[in-house]
Image (cartoon, rainbow, N blue to C red; front, side, top):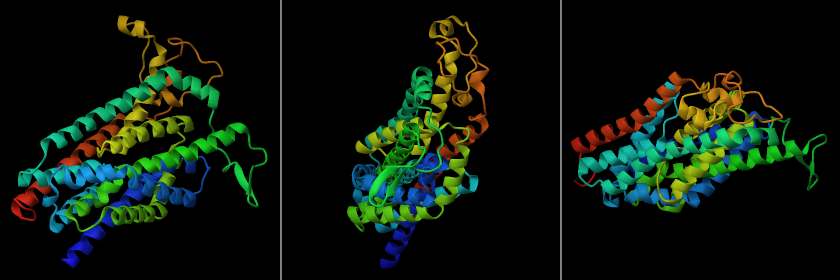
Length: 384
């Protein structure tokens, strides 16, 4: 039994390690890409705020996944290890295909497979989770679509956030001072990039801590507080090691995604996931962030026509998520006066790649659920 517990803890650490590796790039990619913070500082901030997120609102998600989808009695130690195994397997498959899997959706899929196999699945709780899985991406899309259509051009003109040459506030002994030749705009941009990155890390910790430890907490073999610290430590190890590659990838790819657009995507997606974590719903930060990017570009591109012209079938509408890479203007044209050619610059949104990502997002939790169902049906690891 002690050996099995060690195996369970090792799998939990593996899951947390991979969460840290992938989430750090998402949270601090803009900060590292704009040279506002170093990779080392990003990893440290990721660890601190992920633990804070798990320690506070993350408890609600742990409660849902550790005893509400199925009763806690179903989480024998062997069953808990099996559930975590499927989560780890999904991460492995996603890494092979180069697509970040939703660990939250995969973990819920594994637990649902256990519940169906043993006849203990709470369909009301599961239904509420699935409804939010459908609502959250749609809400993310439309929130950012409205921002892209009505607010983004003005925000882009007012703020003009650009990549700088490092964090503009330095320490002179123990007293902070603004670096020589740093403009107020650079100071504001740097502070926003770091604060929003920390907020994103908090959201990731709140949502994802449960994925690593909820089954073991549900089994009673691991208390909540030590579990959160264990998951936080594993996330930190991932942030300081394999996250360096994801930070390079995300930071360099941000040349196609303006800094202001990246920050809007982070704020909206992190706010949605934090809200869902508060009400105990495990959800995917990656899915919400992707829909935010698509929605922001779609809304930006639709400025080429007015709503009345669109309803009449008039106007030249060339919808493209790449529209948020369009060149800035000091004067924002009125709705319907912008040129479609200017709003299709770049190649930010690849439909084929997005389709592959969405298919794998649906496929990985489905495979986890099917695999868990077969395992728990054939092998009595949990009470029937």
